[in-house]
Image (cartoon, rainbow, N blue to C red; front, side):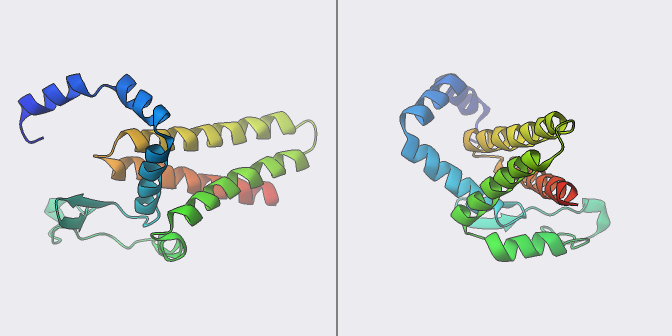
Length: 167
């Protein structure tokens, strides 16, 4: 895949509709790919693996003078807590995500009738964003880290929404 010619050839052969058809006709494989992505996402920090070498993507600019792969730990307590609970436990992480969405829907029912449509719209939006982020992760195995960041961020926003609705 280092050759631009091979990348172009691969893109013509493996199209998005073909991938969608494959995933729809092979649900077991789709589940395995998704669980692998959730396992990666549960670690909270982007990890890349090229061949046998595994490394973390650093988040400092090169001009900062930090070594390669160095990462900031500023405001990291929440990510560390989630990583300790869900790290490399994709099924538990999936249950967490589903549980958050179910809890949000339960909170919709507890809202006054005049607010219920607005809160339901919020919940639909968050659930749709989570679903879309999950689907994108399944289709993009090369840059999972970026999409997993969005998935994790949306999960965190979902937690915030749930906390706001509980108050």
